[in-house]
Amino acid sequence: MSTKTIAVLTSGGDAPGMNAAVRAVVRSGISFGMRVMGIRRGYNGLLNGDVFEMNLRSVSDIIHHGGTTLYTARSPEFNTPEGVQKAADNCRKMGINGVVVIGGDGSFRGARDLTGAGIPCIGVPGTIDNDIASSEYTIGFDTAMNTAVEMVDRLRDTTESHDRCSVVEVMGRRCGDLALQTGIAVGATTILVPEIPFDFHKDIVERMRFTQKTGKKHFIIVVAEGVGGVDKLAKDIEKETGIETRATVLGHVQRGGSPTLRDRVVASEMGYYASELLNNGKSNRVIVMRGGKIVDLDITEALEMKRVFDKHLYDIAHKISI
Ligand code: F6P
Image (cartoon, rainbow, N blue to C red):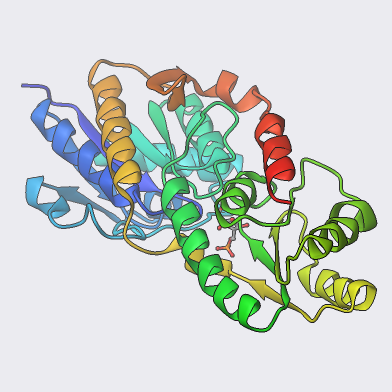
């Protein structure tokens, strides 16, 4: 039986499916014969020793819950060389010889630094933003998209009833994926994303006027958080077109809720894989989805990759939402 002790933490913004990933890490880790510890509130828990032993039952009944039962945090102290050293020293004191870090790019930079300080780490991509360059998919994205679609569908009911225009902001930080997918699914007249510059008259006003001539009376404009400015945009649209316009920011509601099947399954597979890598003595790897398959990459190389926005899908959306 292996005497290895691994630990798992969730860091950065929570995402639906993180619990499924934690569950998979714990259950598979134990099945490989390892001891598994839970770290509360991200890297903060490593700095202040908020660590506890987990067993098979510690992760019962969590696969369907949103948020993260390990809690999460962004840790300014850990983001310093002294913080990383302290976290590594604490790991050694607690006998932790491997950590699974579930989070976004910022969390992976922490995992790379902690590995550099002598504690093997494996990253698992968990964020609703889908903004990790090395992975086609991040845990939480599917649930957040479905939540956003449900919310915009509701918004459409009232927008349609009043012959109005709704300008709706969805999350995604600097990434337009959530806006693009949601925009397509709700049939938005225009989708604004940070990756593609837009022209107010050509991309919004003229499109609204054109569709108005063909009989359209209400409009949904989906705006990515990275573009922002929805209040001003709504005022400008109303002024220019004469169509009554309202702005809505969906906000943090997109981060909550029971994870979809896809998030539960991807998280389970990624969590298992992370545990398996640590059991096999691997370190400084990140679990990613590439070509629809779950594989692992070097964290440092993964962090250097550049995201490619799906311009083809964006162009399709533009053509069919008219
Ligand atoms: O990274 C997830 C995310 O929800 C982003 O979409 C958003 O920009 C950010 O986190 C919000 O962060 P906070 O929860 O700190 O307000």
